[in-house]
Length: 443
Ligand SMILES: NC(=O)c1ccc[n+]([C@@H]2O[C@H](COP(=O)([O-])OP(=O)(O)OC[C@H]3O[C@@H](n4cnc5c(N)ncnc54)[C@H](O)[C@@H]3O)[C@@H](O)[C@H]2O)c1
Image (cartoon, rainbow, N blue to C red; front, side, top):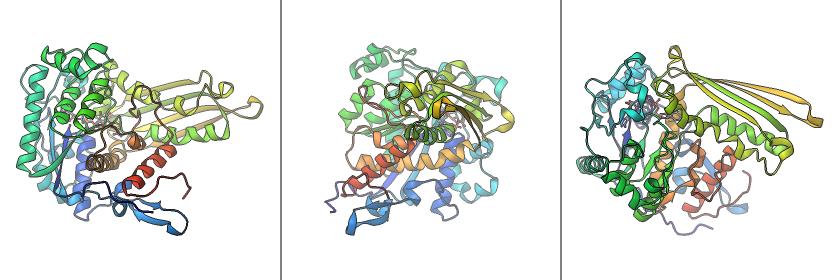
């Protein structure tokens, strides 16, 4: 039975502020602009193409997501960005070489109008980005002048207010699609409470406060939800949980689940449900884009490694089946290999065992396109986070775990990694927001 809608309508314009205007961001923005002109198909976007069941028995219906909950029309989206490179979105899309020129030209004017604002940047958190050995270094560095973390936050807040006013936006979502930052371990004093976090900003604690944290703080203070598309610790700290709840705003993350981890979290449930043992899982990749360049540095790789390595152990639970999943040798590698550019190739070797412990092997070789897989995830995360905002949902949005490699949860809760369980969670939340009952019935 349909109940009253709790979600505010998607009136007015939605501003989307992307931190980072590189391969993923420009592929996402170009595809969205092309789709709204009817020139491209948003393949991979559940929010745009998905149909799902609502109701049961005689009341069963299959509806598009937008017929269940009020979704923002693509025509009502305005894009803005920050980056350390001065390239506008058109120039950056050409530089990144993900899309063919013929797929960019029809929206050239709109892309050229997206000019990055000065970044809140600290090279210590993105080492290789500034190393000429790896390629182009920004000249000049398009970043806020050297200042305290606290003043950076005030600058970003002013940027958001200006963007919102100039573009007459009803609401704004802020989205990190920038480089993976060097790993920033949690520090209780700085990250444990909002008061500690603000004190550290005022004291300009550069060691514990990564630039992404400053953007996130500024966004939440300006009433904007925040999405973390990289594996950065950023909003995955108690201080940000506190701020997002205090402000009544959603936070979402982290690290797009686009290629290898999507495959892994779809395959691991096969072994878990058929009770096949796993002895080892070796995952390696070659990647030649600027993201690969940044991740090549050990400090930045550490952030990615933790994110990529955390998935299968939550699906193949040692505590439930020690005879099948004890001491799984799980190794993850990413190798920077420029000739491949954005066309990442991944290999997985899985050593499994079956009846009477007889060993078997599975090999997976995925020749993918990193940003082509990430773009629809960006679109869905942006649209569903805006939905969460209008529904008054605040804090960590676990129902969006479907889209991320390392789903954030509050500290005492287990993340869900199984792709199909995550999909059920997503659909159930959409059902609830549409006034239908959540259920586990198979479609
Ligand atoms: N399939 C995928 O492509 C995929 C999957 C998961 C996560 N990610 C993550 O998405 C992010 C973007 O990937 P990409 O391929 O577009 O990388 P990219 O290098 O092409 O783009 C990143 C951009 O961020 C900018 N940047 C870095 N630090 C900044 C800061 N402090 N402020 C503003 N801008 C800053 C860089 O200058 C660059 O233009 C990476 O963190 C990557 O790990 C991508």
